[in-house]
Image (cartoon, rainbow, N blue to C red; front, side, top):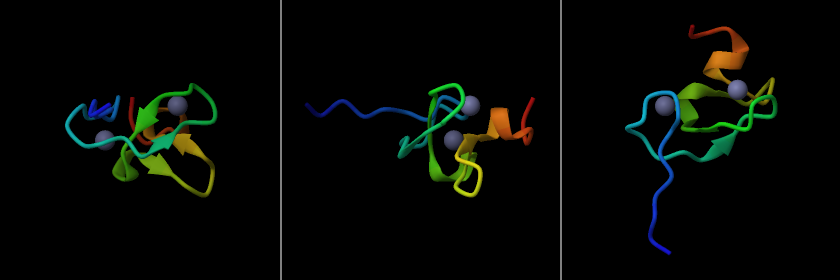
Length: 46
Ligand SMILES: [Zn+2]
Ligand SMILES: [Zn+2]
């Protein structure tokens, strides 16, 4: 199992977290650990 899950926001970095709201796999740069949301759900990206 060497498949790498890519961040669903930038699609270039390895996803290490999962958004609590939409379930998207996101990289550390697009995940807010305080809220547990991805950049999209946190309002940082439209
Ligand atoms: Zn990303
Ligand atoms: Zn989300």
